[in-house]
Length: 479
Image 1 (tube, rainbow, N blue to C red):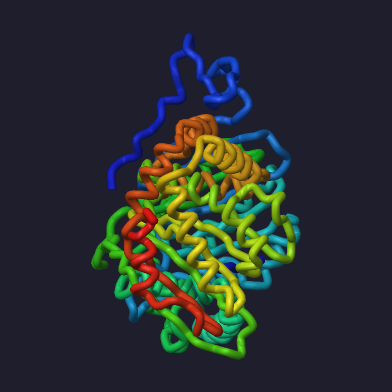
Image 2 (cartoon, rainbow, N blue to C red; image 1 turned 90 degrees about the vertical axis):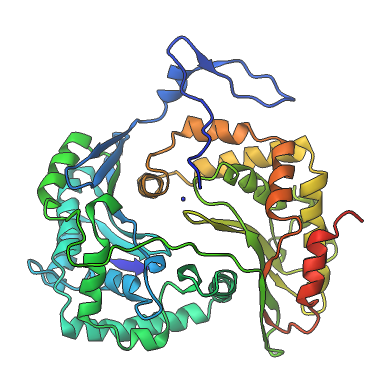
């Protein structure tokens, strides 16, 4: 067992037509014959959804495999905390495996190991997840174990104290991962003064004082039926899982009796700059981002395509002229950076779109200037061939990421919380196919051109331009 650290409704592309109609997948420069809807759907198992009386939704995809992944996705994470309680959600996730009223920690570990199963959990800024991967015949047993640790954890004082040191060590490990450090600082500066600006693990002073009552308060205030999804993928029987969920999760409440109902506050984006100078570091580690779109915003798909066009580069892996991204080619030819990675991080009502980079101290300014020039190209001169290539890469990556019962189960749980439904593969593919160069230019001109960026840099940062210069580059593209 281990523990680790989605405005308006979306404008959906009509992909599921009547029985006598068909879908056409294709690009402007390539004609592909129409494929009947039924023929497309036969290759993808149906995602069945049932809502229980207490608001819990059960969503499954039965692919008939011998293995299965079963889990509970909860609409609760660090975004639902306050500065005083920041870190409680992650702390609670750690405590899930420390024993219940029915099973000691040792009994729990032996029971999971004897099944040959894997029990895991993680916390993000908007979600907390508990799941198990097991043989399909053991899926009912796995669900019972998850229900037990979610509803009956002992949260003993001795276990809380022991786990405190574990979390503090985990924080030290995170602080040695520069990408994690940069992204925590990026959230803190981009969403300063809001819940999204807080870290998932919480500050050290909070970890040292979190107590049992804090954990119980968080459960009572957030673990409610309408905010929970039981997801299953692989060899799972939907009707059986519904019956088991009704049995094991019957005590999950709908109401917030005597507890303040948590509100999803607006997390405003603030263009800002944060730097830590350390001349002893070999590289500058940084991120450059603007406010992106939320999960269910229709602009999210064109932004994903633009993000894919920017691509990524790693000096250690080579590439040079063989890479498809113009930005990556130039970065390789001019030796502008050690690596960079474009990203599109989404939340319910906002997001971060930008680039994470590791650059040499004397090249970092040239790199960021070239990056802004590529933003310009995406907003004014992106070609249909660039968009076509990026769409193909995006679809391929989407399918590769759904290889296995666990990523499929994660996709089901996350989408049920973010969209309120599971988007069929055929629909997502058609939404990607519908993006044109004009769409990419439009979102770039809306979200990036003349916008205030959030900039974070750590290391030998003396060669970096000042923030007003970066802000000017975001508006003075038409040179």
